[in-house]
Length: 589
Image (cartoon, rainbow, N blue to C red):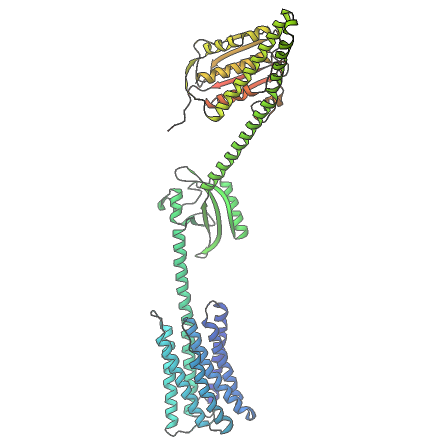
C-alpha cells in the first residue's frame, strides 16, 4: 500500500495535536514542576509550525509561512531543551540559544524574501537543527544527574539521533541532490516526516516517563518523610479502621505513654484495650470526625496499661487505605498541662481562702475585739473615777463584770492565737492514744464557773475505756470550744450533754448537745465558712465571733476526721466529732 506525502503530513499534524493535549493535561496536573509548562510550549510551537506548513500552499502567504514554520520548529526544540533543564533544575544558556537563532534568521530571511533559494534554505535549516540538537544533547549529557533515569537517556539519544539525521540530510543535499516543495513526493520529504514522527513519539514517551519517575520519587520521599514524622513524632499516633476501631498501626510514642506492647495493641480495638476512660467520649469523637471529615483538639481522658489516667488532646482525620476508610488520630499528652492547671486552681483557691482568712481576721479585730475592749475600758474608767464613792456591793459587781469581760477577751485572743499558729504551720501535730474522759473533765473545770452562773447542768456519758487517737493540745482546744459554745448559747437552767462512743470502724464519735437557742438552716450551712458572718451574742450577752468553730474544723481536718451539727431553732444544737482510730502522718525530711 502506497502512502502519499499528504497522509504523512496529516499523521504528523495529528501526532502534534495529541501531544499538545497530553502536555496540557500534564501541565494542569503537575504545576509544581517547572518542566511541563515548557513542554506544553514545545507542543504548541510544533502545532503552530504544522499550521504554517499547511499555509505554505497559499501562494501569497508562502514566504511568511515558510519563515514561521521553520522558526516554530526550531523554537519547539528549544522549548523542549529548556523544559528538560528546568525540570532537572539546571542552568540554561539562553545567550547561546539566542545567538544560534540570530545566525539562522538573518541568512534564512535573505534566501526567502530577497533571493528565493529553497536549496540554500533547506541546508541552512537542517544545519541549524543539527547544531541545536547536538548542542542540546551535549548540554543534557554534561548536566545529567548522577542517578539519571532511562527517560533522560532516551531524550539525549533522540537529540543526538536527530542531529545525525539532520547532518545526513545536509550531506545528502551537498552531494548534488535536488529538492522541490515540501509536499513533493520525494524520498527526502518522506524521510523527514517519518523521522519527525519517530522523534516526537520518543520524546513524548520519555518526558512522560520523567514526570512519572519524578512523581514516584516524590511519593517515595513523602512516604519516607511521613514515616519519619510518624515514628519520631512527640505525640502518639494511631491508625484505626472506621468500622470497628481495630488498630492497624501506632507509633513508638503511643507505646511509650500507654505502656502497651505491639503484640498487645495491633489487631485489637480501642474498646478491647479499655483505653477510653469514657466510651461516650469515644462515640462523640467518632461522630464529630464523621460529620466534618476531620476534627481538632478534642479533649478526653484515657487509661494506660498500669491504670494511670492520661489527659489527651485528640486531632483526627479520615484517610483512605486499601480502598477502606481509616481514622488517623494524633494524641497530644496534656497531663502535665492539666496538672499545672489543677495546681493553679488549687493555688487560686488557696489565695481565696487566705483572703477570706485575712478578711475574717480584720473583722474580728475591727468588731469582735473592739467592742469588748471598749466595754472593759468603760468599766475601768468607772472604777478609776468613782471608786471612792461606790458602795462595796457595786464595786464587787464591777469587778465581776471586768473579770467576765477579761475572760471572754482572753478566750477570743487564745482562739485567734491558736488559729494563726495553725495557719502558719507552727502548731505541732503529735497524735497519740489518749483517754477521753480525763480530758473532758479537765475542760469542764475551766467552764464550771460559767455554767454555775447560768445554772446550767453538765451531764457526761463517756466510758473510762474510751480512748481517742489525737493530739492532746488540739483535743483540749476542741472540747473547750464546743463546751464554751454550748454554755454560751444555752439559757439559764439549761443542760449540756457530753457523750462519746466507738463506731464499727473503730473511730471515736464525740458529741456535745445543748438545750439552747439552736441555729437556722442557713447558719448551719455557713457554720464552717471563713467568709460567713456568724457573730452573735450568747443568751447572757457573751461574745462570739465563730472563730472557735473554725479552729475546731482545722483541728478535726488535721486528724482526718469529720465534724458536723444537727440543730433546730429554740430546741438546741448537737455537735458531732468523729476521729479515726489512727492518722497517717505526712513524711517529713
